Amino acid sequence: MKKFTVLLFCMLFSLSACSNDNTPKDDEEQQSQEEAVEDENEEKLTVANFSAVDSSRDGMKNQTGGILIDDISLEQELDMDNEDFINENKQELTEHLQTITNETTDPVELEQAIVHLLGTPNYTTAIETAEAFQPNFPEPDLPDAKQVEGEVEGESGSGKAMLLLDASSSMLLTVDGKVKMDIAKEAVQEFADVIGQKEDVSLIVYGHKGSEAESDKKLSCKGIEEIYPMGPYDKKDFEASLNEFESKGWTPLAGAIDKAAEMSKELDGEITLYIVSDGVETCDGNPVKSAESFVDDNNHRQVNIIGFNVDEDAEEQLANVSEAGNGEFYSADDADELKDTIDYEWLPSRVDLAWAHTKAPGPWEILDEYDKYDVEHDKIKTLVKKEDERYDQAISILREEELITDEVTEELKNLLSENYNIRIDELQELRSEKIDEIDAIADEIKKRVNEWKEEMERRKDERGDIW
Image (tube, rainbow, N blue to C red):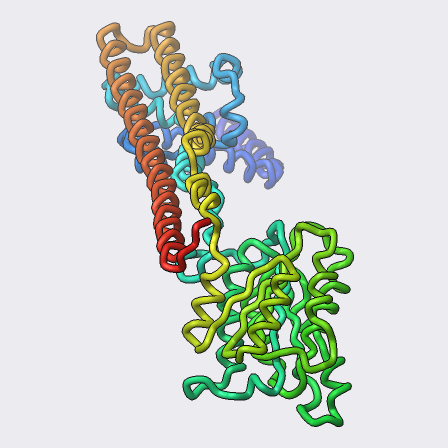
């Protein structure tokens, strides 16, 4: 009988072993993985793995999203209905809360657990976006190369400036030991830095072909060339264009003005010629008639001329050309005068200066930037409020399931309320910082505008300008 019992036991053991061997290996692995995941989740819900609650701004930015909500984006959370979210996840949330309260009912640890379950994952994005906000005040148009900072290349303005540079052989002469052509190039570059901030620019050169010999007169007088095509100002390209030529030949002033007129036929808006020349027309043209033709029936055109180190005859002719072109004539005898003239002679009018304050941000523009910032700021406030709502709903579940006492409930509510208030205070401090930054940027622009206005008024006073 004993032998039969032993035999039967062995047979049953053998069948059991065979049955286990027939279990698919993949199923075993899957079951093992599922158990590992469950173990990992259980591990997360132990007090030892909860983080202390830090409601400072840095603490909010470093907060890891709760395990029930960590895959939700900022936009989704802002639009999310908390009540719907809790209802959809109530069973899982309740089970987690039961697991936690089996281990602890300490209010501080319960607060940490609730944040671990329901804390927003989106503080970092929202706060860093708000911190990075910068007001978009327009850069004021302050046409003075020595005053304006941060000029933007490549942005077109409302007007168009055509710079005409005399490169005839007389520009090879020297003034104060320096070649006139080199002085003129430096001055024109500086002027382009200024005018190019608000206007499209073109550079036309004449007198740079052939030579001053009679045999080269025709070549030289026809050699008028646009070496920087009309368009947005680019300092590097403009400077490169100035290095493409040297002074050589005759002076086709009338032809250069005619060239500008031909080029501007299809152009709209204000068009101004700025001519730098050191002598009279030598190519048998009539620059006065050319200037008259350029501005004929067009109040939005002007011909301004700077006579560089010119004699009386040249000064008279150039002054007549600028008058015929509804512009101004200025005389510069040396390098310093030429640079000062190009930089400063075309100064704003007294009327323009009276309205200079409008170049700086006004109260409405500043308030508009406040509102733009508040759009980002309010996103953080919404996250704080939504997060607090979820915490309240977690407390309600704890009470409904009788997982904590009334005393613990009250202490937990106080802790959550205290940290909510800290977050709101942190946000108020952040907003105050950003408002101060916006005001500081506006004040800096106002300061630059005021300094520019005072400098322009001083120069106009020195020059004796009434208007």
